[in-house]
Length: 428
Image (cartoon, rainbow, N blue to C red; front, side, top):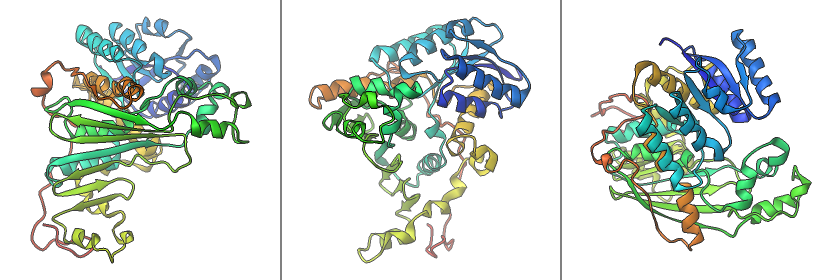
């Protein structure tokens, strides 16, 4: 196989964005499109025709697309509630499967994914693009090189103000709305958890053991926004929402590490994932683009109370030799293809794994473990923060499975002696 014939299921804003990114990947041909809304299919079809000069077949029913013998692989970007059933059906149909992110509705969803993969052997990848982000991979590389020492604590957030998008659910045919009306949980855990789980080798020498979750009073932020003139759908003015505005989840791991996740989507704020890694020799923080290592003399100056933080912002840029080649060589055009280049790199990794017959960089066990956080957090919140055991979806194989990063990371020798960083301090 030299190229992959791809069908895309779900053509809302996310699916359409992935379609446009896939169109610049030489490894794939988009031969089929599926959505329950005809106008979305026609728009995506027009994009393909303009870019490639081919006309993909349109399928209102995803099961018909899966029967198409011309389709080798599918990209699923539908609503959250359809991810598992579509992915299971795709694996049973023998189609290489890529699935957009979102939490599960029940732990049984996650077991269904694992069973379908183990029974069929059909490769499946979760499209967690944040695992491919520049800063997350830089930090992963520093961890692998031992520069942060023993990692003990990581935190992340999905801090993304979405009040208008959520309340525009009926207007824009978007799926988040009903989730916020009926559920109270960490509903979108994988952006923050995915890169952390990779750093901590979850399912590959380590595993998550249990979680506790708490939430603020349900619906306050959304209900206030619904009463304002910014509400895109006046019919929702008096709607009661179950979802808490802030959800905090703490996860314990077999290796002794603790992970903190925060869902923060319905109060005013700027966007952030707050990706932070703490080790015995230093830390990384995405919001400030900061890497501080104990071996750097200026780290001790930074903690002096008379110093200001501004001097040290963006100091991660002195460690760019730790970036994988994909980020060193990325073009401005590729970075513009969605989420600063993450979407492009994740699709390239999916296609590369198919063509080389390699393991998927984010596999079914990752997918199941990360998605399970949602229903487990829902149970914990409902029971006052009671701890919930996180299943071992590898059924013991986490002990033997070798660590695997989503991209090949460079082997960097620690600089010594008189080498100076950009602040004039020795890097030892």
